[in-house]
Image (cartoon, rainbow, N blue to C red; front, side, top):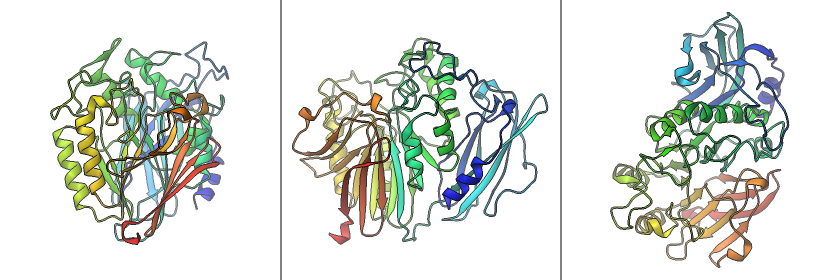
Length: 449
């Protein structure tokens, strides 16, 4: 179904100049009855001054200026969008980087929807972009669910200079029901340029999501984003810090304007009878990394711990996937002290692994690490799967010599992870950037063992 929709969308013509949606759309926070549709009104329909310079010697190339005007939503519709005007036009301006998020309600489970976003510039010019998505199955549905995850991506280390990251083209061929970006979406603290103020940070978002592969993928695949250190402020950051002139509060503001949002940064979503996913938040509630380890040092915070314990214990999903922006099991590099797999947060890490392993059908997926792996915690038996970085150029920081006996698979290359869940089993596949399978692990459902 989605392949037909994608083919139709590719026939849509976009004017080159005047007004446009150069950043496409982002469809996020999808449930069985709701979704959030993100748009940004731009001065042109594509990034201007395109060049294929690998090292970005002129960092303001691929510029994507915003445009003051109004945006509206037509749909979503099951039969396809009507030829009508939006119910409401929303004014966008520089205060939110010309972005807006439409909250869509009253949808039906397991249903394919098509929609149009429309833009109107102050000069009176109009633009239109079509998108599509499918809602989650109802909690009593036996439907099989396939989704994909990735992490650690940036503009300079894209593997296709003109089009973006090859994984987006590869993931789309799998027809995933949704996608999870597990943090490090944008690197403020990497060069070409360093983003030490709001204007430069926004620029890095705008150029990345104007890349053609990214734009086509997000036009038809609902997604969930987790933020980590590099896409809030800087490496291993915590609340109250700054990066040049960029403050912690400004970093969060930009994140919340650029990505479809829910009311809380930590949340859980049900995808049928056999799958529930949890997206914890690892930056906004944490203690300083420099604090001495002990029972009071935390990444999750008391409020989030209460939510996590309550919702996981209440869930009757066959598989419960804890999808974290940082490792829980590891192993990780000895010089790191930023996550639950490190000694800097050893006390809470042990508590978290013990709790997650006590939950039937619980498995960890993580981002942050630039290598693909599968580990089984020797103390609790908790499984963890790391997707690896989004391109081969971004991979590194580990080697086969570091592999321990409880790390069942290690590959220091780029790629992504796909997961298929049904009533009998959960299958985890590591893919390279072109979609070729490099590792497959099948975990039987708890009641099937």
